[in-house]
Length: 442
Image 1: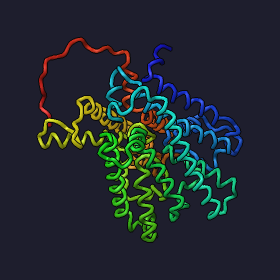
Image 2: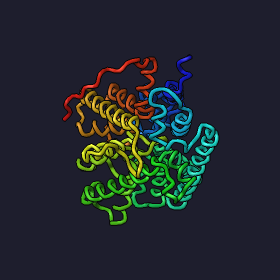
Image 3: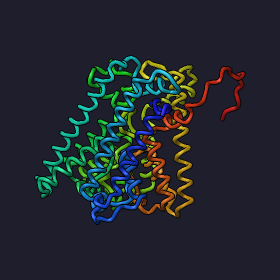
Image 4: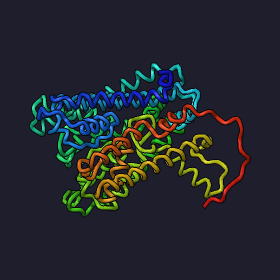
């Protein structure tokens, strides 16, 4: 019990508790439309995917789960998303000691921008932003579904609320069997969902900074500048890459007009970075498009939000290190600021752990199923980065493969640094340092 007082161990324990509770609720007979209790693996996989705000599914959410089951799923990804935002932010605010805690905060917010005494106001602000955005998006979606799609008021409200909460929490769950493919040409549905995804994928420290300084970009923290410009760059790259690569694909963008192509390319430049909704058939993407998605999913969104991946700041810090090394500069940095050594080491640690986990998981998946390697790699990256996109193989994975995906979703959401730190809590720092000697590198 004493060990759980440390927030590094408490956070994973709370997530595990939520997953167990969700599994028990989804295993109840009235959680399914058939009235037959869901298999334990199905309930566990769905609960983990919801709490980890991933969106990968082994059964159709719209037809397999009853209204009660869908409400449980909604509550799980609302709790998972809100808990992640508050935990990631307040966790950093309270951190004052231990391996990587202060450094973790340094990659999320510029020091002294949020003080420990602001913790209560930060929590309230997160709640206000969450409820306000979800309410606005739900209202727009419900009105559109009622007016244009012959939904009853009850159906329109339910689907609107479900997708608004799912979008803001980057969960990727849909109450429709084909996700957003039925709205390929409807910007009134797709654009609000996209904007909600982009906003929360920025991370709460960025929201806080933008709220304080708005258009005064010179006053933005280094973290905010990196996240904003990094997000814009990734959205532009994803948009043009998908537009060019899928332009003539008869199974995706090919049959659409210019407006439809641009709208869906925009949607799929946003979703691979964190959300998991799809307006196009991902399984029909060309190999080169899947490779672009590998990169977008791996990088993910901003820190201290609901986005997954290694995070934009981590990738940019590593890129800056490479550039500084090539140009023989002493320090790596951006926007007139240099990065601390601890932040550089953390970025290298996160990327190394993430790459190792994805590689190992893909090898394990290849051993237990004969499915195509590119599909298994896509699934592994999507699970670790809590994206939720799939080429359609999730339900085909054997139980062992599903357990691998479950582990990836959990580790990807809780965070590689948090998990590694939790395991290393008992280690004591050495009271000495070895003599320095440099091996040959490269």
